[in-house]
Image (cartoon, rainbow, N blue to C red; front, side):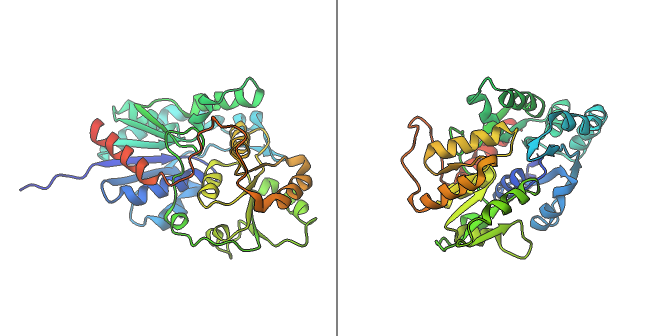
Length: 333
């Protein structure tokens, strides 16, 4: 009897941080039991990816960077910085399309990357998109930030056969979790886990210095275990990235979320976090006041939801999402 060949999917993701990659890692850990995988990712994320999946082929994608100034996205400089990627996109996509065909890829899964879906369409390969940013279409506003986010989405979210929106509020699926988060030993100690990006580090460290009676664990820190600190924290101070907030909600940790200025998605995440009763929207310019209020109320969370019509998803949707992906691959390839 001839053994059937396993199907192969190409998985791509973008991002300067580990948010999109964390979702991809969580899904790939389970998908590998059923199908073969090859990754396409920016160079800055490949080393971490390779450490989790040694032996799995990893190919390069251009890095689309957000240029920031004073904790705010500079859209003009961002556009200029990424001009070369846009100028050379056609040539790169043609080569990528040929590569997908040559490597025998049956379908692709893409998390907010515009390049692999375009190449897959050219090669007539089925395309499944998975991202959080699709939630913005369900929560539009007539503000400059919202309009800029919709424009960015029109560039990043294009060709697809189907799309799964991952969001802890009103999503098709909820949190997608790494094994280390899912298996973390939960407790409640005295410390506050603080995750700060470089653009906001000085501001946040200055603000928390006003609270010497509290113990703060500052991350990123290569010498400390972030997941262990998060799972045992009394509360969390972090930006408004969706993956971080999803993990905190799953672990039942109250959050003071400080969205990056100019990022409508993060503002929306923090707004929905606060309306759900799981945390507080933290304003960058009045941070000392926000931290004081958060620390005063930290043991009262979750509080009653401010908006009853928000559908909050705070359980583990990893296997449900894996099943959706496998179903897509089986139906389309």
